[in-house]
Image 1 (cartoon, helix red, strand yellow):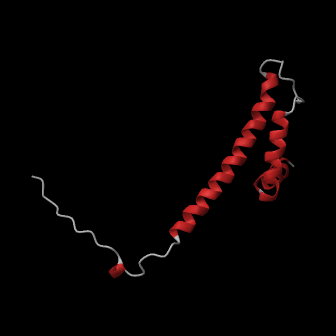
Image 2 (cartoon, helix red, strand yellow; image 1 turned 45 degrees about the vertical axis):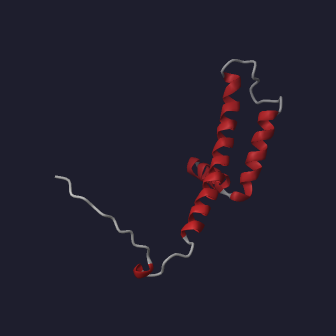
Image 3 (cartoon, helix red, strand yellow; image 1 turned 90 degrees about the vertical axis):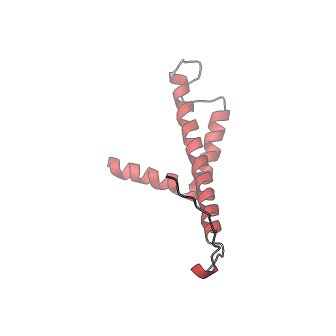
Length: 98
């Protein structure tokens, strides 16, 4: 039972369709004065905010990483020399060190 719940949760979290709902919902929760555990209770009141903030940072960083990977992939697919003979050769005068 536990595996099916965690698998469902992971699939929902990783689904791009729900990602923006998670981001918007966590922002609303963090900015609203209503909490699951009130913030005036030391430590316990901050735990729910910390968990939601962690979820928000994880989602936003995942979006940024995917965009970065997409840019790297598209720049690596840019046209370049097709054969080694067309590649630029750099001549280096090397000196031996004794």
